[in-house]
Length: 119
Image 1 (tube, rainbow, N blue to C red):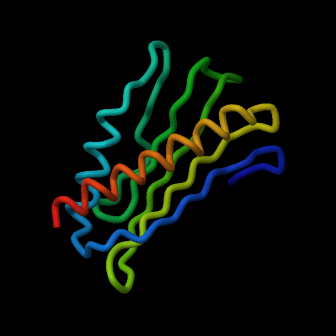
Image 2 (cartoon, rainbow, N blue to C red):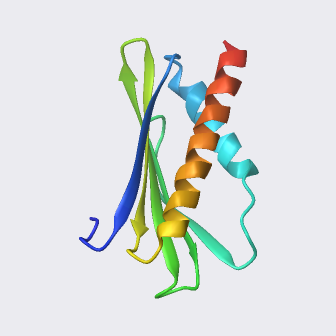
């Protein structure tokens, strides 16, 4: 649950493919290619095959920078709806929020291009 002091990014896109297995595999491949800075930690929290993936990541341990990312895939007319929510941005983390928003927009744009090439 997000506290009143936190902000969350919530991005939803429609991918024009019904093959959630391909979509999830490509998403995981793309995430695996992302570089994680030294000293940062990542822990997978939930894996529901072809439906949900959640992980937390951050740096500095307790009291440091910590976020939770949740991907949800749901069937939709014409394809698959992909929802990504990243929560845990504190009120003093405006730069991190803006950077994450930019990064996720770029990530999803790249994911759409790769999937279009596969169809």
